[in-house]
Length: 413
Image: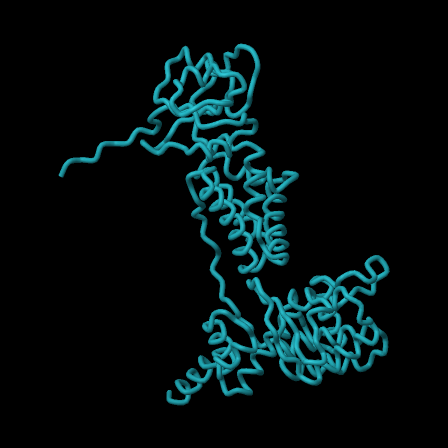
C-alpha cells in the first residue's frame, strides 16, 4: 500500500478581486489595476478548496460593486505589490503593505473576518426567530459577550471566528469552564454553548469560516424533578390568593390558573393578547414553544371564571391580556420575569419552597398522568409536547419505578 503523501500546510496564495464593470474573462492584472476595485488575499489550507465570491465578499469591510474577477495561483510579486486593496480595505496611491506582510497576515479567510461581516452574520443568525427565541438567544450571546469583555455581540462573534478552529474551540472551552465555575445549572450551560455553536454553524453555512465548534456540553439529567408543588401545593397557592382582595390578586389568580389548569408555559401566558381570548366560546389561542401558528385550547369553567374576574378589573380594550400594576410600567405587558417573581412570592406566602411557573406546569402534567392512568397519548394533547419521550420521563418519575423495584429486591433479600 502506497504511503499517503503528506499535505502541505499552505498550498497557494489566491487573489479575489471585485471591480466595477469587470467580467469573468478579464486578466488578473487588469483586476489589480482597475479603479475602485477591492481585493482579498488569502492562503488555503486545503488544496482545491477555493473561497466562493460570496464568501469572500462576506469577509470584506469595504467592497466595490461588480463581479467576481477570478483567482490566480501563485501571482507574481510585481502584481501583488501593485495591488492597493488588502483584506477588503481600499487604499489610495501606491502601497507596500504586501511586501511587509508576514505569513500570519496571509492566513485563512476566517482570520480576516471583518466587523461588517460579523455584523451581517449576527443579523442573519437572528432573522426569522420568534420573539421568545430571539430574546433567549440575545441573553445567551450576551453572556458570551460579557465573558469576552467586549461591547457588542457583533464584536464577540468576530473574535470567536477570527482565529480559526483551534483558537475558537479553545476560547469556547474557557467559556465553558467559566460557566461551570459560576455554578450554573447544566441545562443553562448547555443552552449558552448551543447558542455559540449555532452562530458558528451559520458562519460556516454562509462561507465565512470553514469549521464548526467541537466543544461538548456538560452532562445533565433532564427533568430530574417533574413533580412541582403538586395538587396540594397548587391549592395552597389559591388559598393564599383568596386572602387578598386587591386587583392584583385577580390578575395573579387568572395567570396561575392558566399555568396549572392548562399547563401553559410562562412565555405562553405573558404573550397572550385580548384577541386570543374567546370567553363566549371557551377557547384560548396559544402560541406554543417552537411553533409558528397558534392553536386553540379549551378553557375549564374555573379558569374561565378567573379570567372573567380579571377582565372586570382590566377592561376589554385591545392589548396585552396581562398587564403591569407597577408605577413605572403600569399598563404595559406583564413580563416573564415578573410572572416568575409573582409565583415565587405567592409560594412563599403559602409556605412553599421554590415555587416557579414551570413547576406548576410540571405539577399539572404529573397530575394529568395520574388521573388518566398514565395515558401519555391523551396527556400529550394537554401538555402539547412534541416528543412523547418527554412525557415518559414524567410518567416514570410519577410512578417511581426504580423505587418500586428496589423495594421488591430488598424484600426478597
